[in-house]
Length: 300
Image (cartoon, rainbow, N blue to C red; front, side):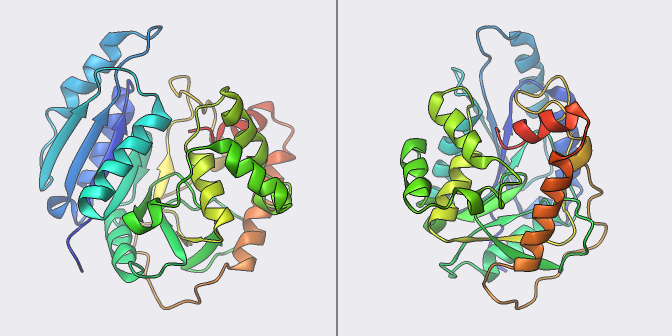
């Protein structure tokens, strides 16, 4: 394996979440071989600065990684700008990066999977990213599979792939409309990414993730997914900036390594259909809280 990719951890004001995310990362096999970069955003005008200060006090105690570098913003970037700038700076320096947000609890095999996949597919231009989370579908999924587009709950990419990220949401929407791809982009109408993109353009949602997905999708790029999730999102509470309820998306992280094998570098249509059925089941739920989380899930 090549040198381990640096880990970018993005934090803000949720101390308990950060503690759990770091605790999980420290259980990973390759933790001691990994450089950790922590991006701490400054507080917003209407937020309490003490909660940010508490997080900053904690992150300065973190040890055990190959190195720990802390970047404390002196102004509030917002999640989207913080991630875009942080990812860009690390891929420019290292050529690859593993991205984790403060509400993601990882399996102890997460870093192994990410680094092995980054090495295996480093020169495969068709592949734009590696993803660690897998939706809890009813159907059994392959050990690994590809889907068109990109995702945002524990992921990794290379400098050669991140160059496809398009900042301008308006350009992305125009291309989707010109090619009449909105229906497929929205997983056959079961998940309204197009609506989320329009909200990003209007400035009502601060989303880097929907632009990353659209950028990958429009270039017909693939993301590798694990059939058993290596990530669980614990951010569905009142402290979340966007997501308030994630009950339907909760999963148990893998208790054994996800094995990489040689699979066709094409979109797995059966896996795609399993995701479509999952999104449809969530959308059709009578519970309003699940409707709310569906709307907010991709607004990080």
